[in-house]
Length: 214
Ligand code: URA
Image (cartoon, rainbow, N blue to C red; front, top):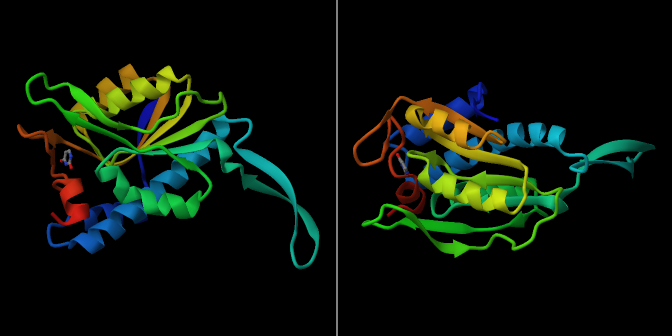
């Protein structure tokens, strides 16, 4: 539906820790995970409005009385980390929705054709109509990789899809919104530039290299 830039000051704080060149790999991972958790909270809060089953009323017993409580039914939740950088947001998702299914995907760009090529695809072959997808792709630069992943997921018939990203380049916003009108993109910030090497500017550098300290 749209690219939604968070207004949360805590998200902005952790994004700026990640942007800082002097932040070491351990602190970078922590910053990206914290940012991911905040964006995911915003995403799931809206995803519940598009789902009849994500939130279930349950009777629970507190130490004092029985009461009705909203809980998240995690069996239809899929988390899709796009390798490598998506792994930097995964561990916190495992804490927040520990019973979600995790479908790793990996693509590289063929240097001659410039087309994305799949090297890992753990997406299920069949999917229930109620499935709710959260794709972890911290950097939306040209948008080529995420577009390939989204096309594949939409072909499965999934309609409740959110993308969690630290940054998107301004020039990519309109193209993704036009191509994927049913997808919500939750981003830490919209950065003004994309340089000739495909890096987002000001950006945060190569997210994968900074996560894995290489
Ligand atoms: N991927 C990155 O890791 N960083 C960028 O700036 C763009 C794509």
